[in-house]
Length: 334
Image (cartoon, rainbow, N blue to C red; front, side):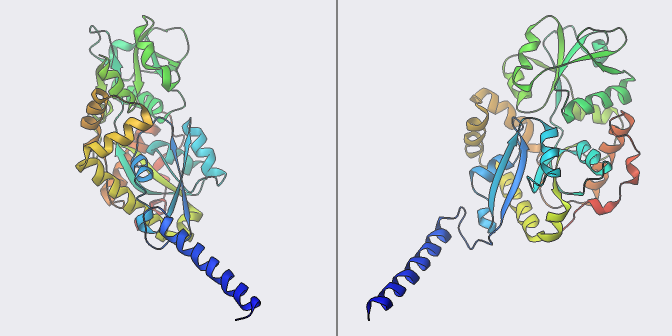
């Protein structure tokens, strides 16, 4: 074998070796299909994406994962519009808002039922009706706040306004960042806060009390089906071009739910690392959320529940048009 043949053989060997190393080093094992699925989530909002990422569950399906954690839900919406993410976990009512605004997104799965709650510290407050004329803290850019307005309107016929000074006969909401919202309950000015997990469990661990949960408000509103909170949406182009990737993501999400439900210590490790939670808070969180996780492709009953969320958001003034006009084609059912 002359020098040129040796050189060619060496180059071929290096290429083959590099391909083999790339294959075995890919998270999750198995043969990659060469696609990285980009998924966006809210920084400080728990979901199965936390476990999918930590345990490389998409690798088992032959895909890589890139996670985009953003500060506000509107940032996630912008990421979808700007093709910066393929999938996103967002509140169901915001998915309706996106669709009504003309964005081509499809709802591919339900992530979690409503885990939000209204927290208080003052024992004298026993009903949301007592919040009239008082200040309530909330993250105004969140779906949790939008649904609070809807629930107060539909269930109690109470208007919610934004401002710094309480007004009679309405609930006045002060915009507070998620990271400092619980501390506002230690002031005399704020009577309650409206928040989601893991902040609800953080509040319970520090001695705050649930005045009313969103699941209770759903029942009081007389709505049928399950109170859907979070859904996974995907850009329409991504769904059309990569249905196998969408199905793979749903499978990975189901595996994450299985870990969540059956392996508490594995779940605690991930959530403690991401959200800096102590065991007392994790116990609260695990107890409150495990039964709220949803698996599988969309079902007809889930679609009906999402439509009920949209109806509530429309009656509360968040959705501007009757959501009954949204076609069933926005629901991806595999």
